[in-house]
Image 1 (cartoon, rainbow, N blue to C red):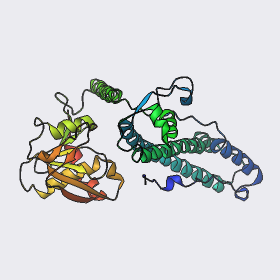
Image 2 (image 1 turned 180 degrees about the vertical axis):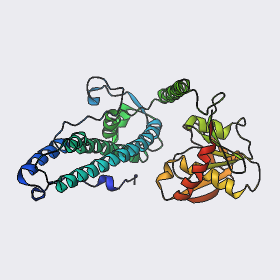
Image 3 (image 1 turned 90 degrees about the horizontal axis):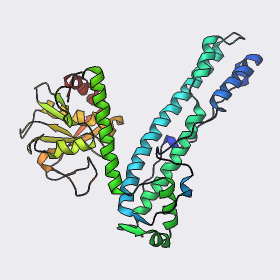
Image 4 (image 1 turned 180 degrees about the horizontal axis):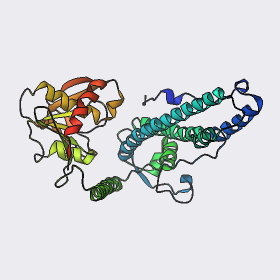
Length: 360
């Protein structure tokens, strides 16, 4: 069975209700009209999943002659992670909009005046549009369902273990036509060379943006040439290096220039995050130093939303790169320890560590 994602995001959102008995007749009618026009009837924005769209729908495009099944699997997994993040953000916007609506309704309930004051009217006009966010949520959830379906079927027979398949061979399978439809509709790129170019282009854009900020702000606490990590310091003055992004994580974890094989390597278990190196060769590092490094690994990961976070710890010499793995993906060998931290502990420890950070 493929991955299933069940959460409050799949629960139908309730439409905001206005009770007529809450207001005097003229005041109720006005506010009901304002609230409905603001929250339920405004033209919605359209969600664009790609900035490379051209005129015409995806279904109008000529089907590809062949498909790289292995690359499709990797790209689909990446897009699922990205879509889940987007769904979470839009869910937060919906909750915020609903909270604002309830506050406005409470203010209207508490108002004894038959007239609408300018301040309340301005709040009504500037309130977030729930319907827009709901439509965006529906589009994201629909996309996520299709991606989940693709991930499940690309990983099992008859596509399991396949590398390159022609369009003709793919369409001969029971699910081939559906796979082609979803790959085309969702614009999933199976060109590995193009993917690498995109990664390099993104990295160049980030560096250019950062350089521009440095030129504008005078560099802040950033000195010297760019390094692939930020530097933090424990109370014992032991250096901790934290990778900035995926390609930087590879450099930090694998290059002898930036760490020794005896240094200690950390990463949040089970989710994406920065690679962290505690720069000590000690066989048994100071416990506070260990927990400082683990706390940074937890903070700089997608696990930080959890109440309890587990962090893997091993020697840097036990970290290696699988052939063809995407940036930031490594494998561990040898002895691997697990450190368990509570979120409150992480936030307390990293608050002090953030005061020591040096960024190059």
